[in-house]
Length: 186
Image 1 (cartoon, rainbow, N blue to C red):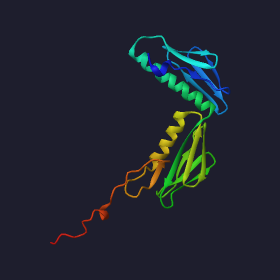
Image 2: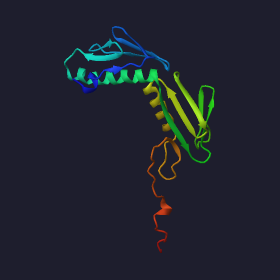
Image 3: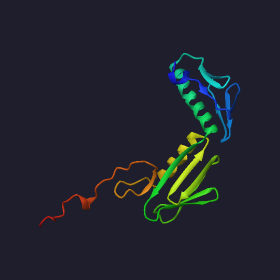
Image 4: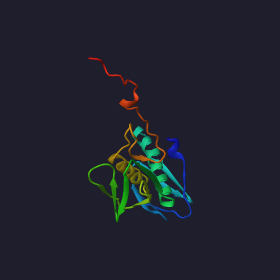
């Protein structure tokens, strides 16, 4: 059995869990999430704890045990407190603007890149160069942050681009910094 799968999930007071035959719904102050379970995985509510168990003995069933326990734990945490990812936009003239439910990024192209914010996420801009993505679904928050970063990933020479806050970008020395300033005599 999976060590992660055996660990019970403690439910906060504000979170309500309902489970059907193969469907689990988690509702809390930050949102409502649902998950469809495979036939070999079952969920039992025991007071303020959620326990995940498997019925099969195949290797794939054991792999699903820890996976679905982790997914349910993320749903409980997301419904209770939510998740957030923070991005920094680095570069001269690089900035972001909110236009309703769309995010406009000016990142060195001849035109701004307009990205629609998915349903269930909120985007905040404390500064034009700082983007905070918040939501109840951990996978959706992380995927949207990765999609924004993919528009202009940080480049290694000047460090310009979109990066996660706290991400370390390895810088390379350019041609001018190599020290071979003498031209070959021809």
